[in-house]
Image 1 (cartoon, rainbow, N blue to C red):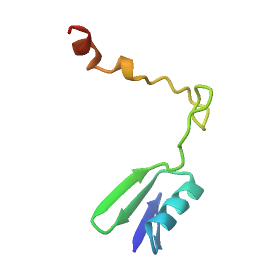
Image 2 (cartoon, helix red, strand yellow; image 1 turned 135 degrees about the vertical axis):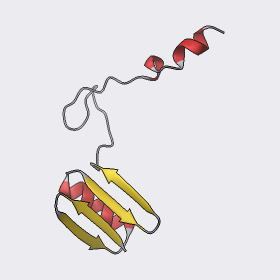
Image 3 (cartoon, one colour; image 1 turned 180 degrees about the vertical axis):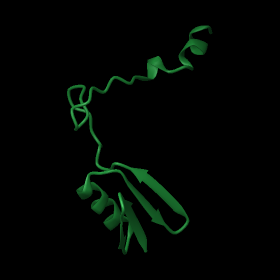
Image 4 (tube, one colour; image 1 turned 120 degrees about the horizontal axis):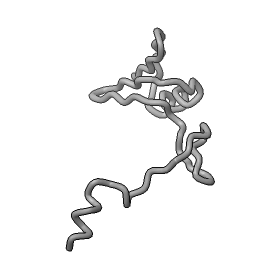
Length: 75
């Protein structure tokens, strides 16, 4: 049994796949609780096209800008 919590509501579903599908349909911040774990977020953001996330926000993260980059360049 999994619970999908959002705002002031809580819905119980039979399996994780159903919980993930419900979270995607709700399109709001949710918490999914299951046996021994809990995960939260807005589900369904799975692609970047033309430099934009599905909601239109510019995706500008790149691995080269990470903190560990400078250490690698010293070698």
